[in-house]
Amino acid sequence: MVAVAKPRKAKKASPRPKPKPAPSSAEVRRDDSGGYWSVAAVEREILDLVRAIDPNAKRLALKRATTFSGDLGWDDWFKLSVLKPVRKRFHESLSATVMLDRVRTVGDLVDYIWASMGPA
Image (cartoon, rainbow, N blue to C red; front, side, top):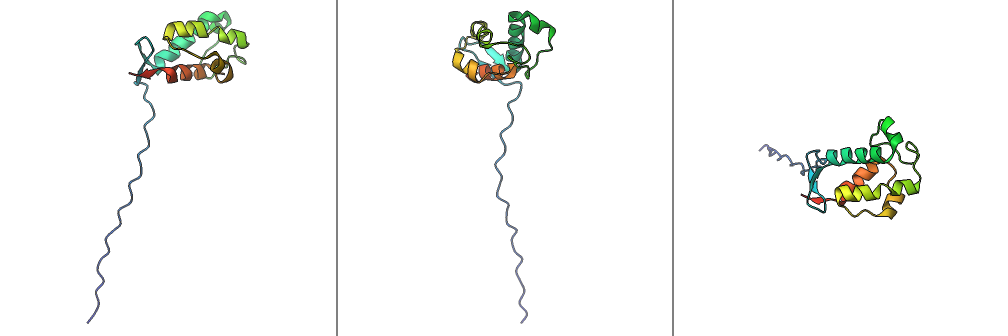
């Protein structure tokens, strides 16, 4: 008698966890007063506020990578002058310590405000 090998069952590959999708630009969050914001709208408002505060910024092509101290030449006191208009516009309580220690670029400020907003 000849032994016949049974065909082996193919092992199923273990399912890989699906990566989380990047936040879409259509994601909406709420500020503390209930206003709805997209990340693009937050970025536009921050750029407008920086241009309104610093007349020299009007001639620069501001973008997320623009640094406050290097590109704009702001010292810490001038950097803190952004807090009041930002708080007034976005109704978010922002920390002066975080502003001085962690926020170095316009994009950092946008990300900080975006992170402080709640889900819609």
